[in-house]
Image (cartoon, rainbow, N blue to C red; front, side, top):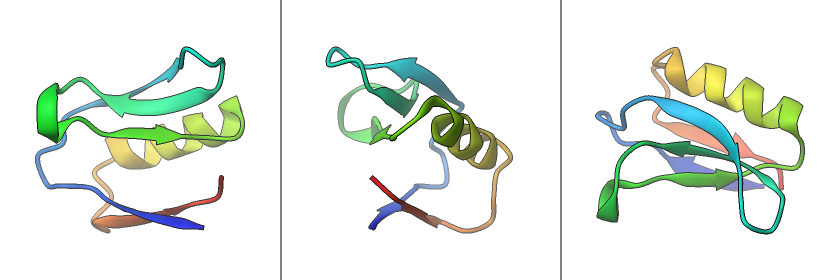
Length: 65
């Protein structure tokens, strides 16, 4: 289990597919403030994306890879 810290001003997140055909949740930033979270399935990626876009007050999320 990995713990990922999300900064306060991360911006909107979206679900996409990486170059190795795994689903990822990422924000629209570039450079050092870009966040990419790999997920096992599309369902897991969509749940995590909804939780992050809802501005969940927790700044740390646990993700199972």
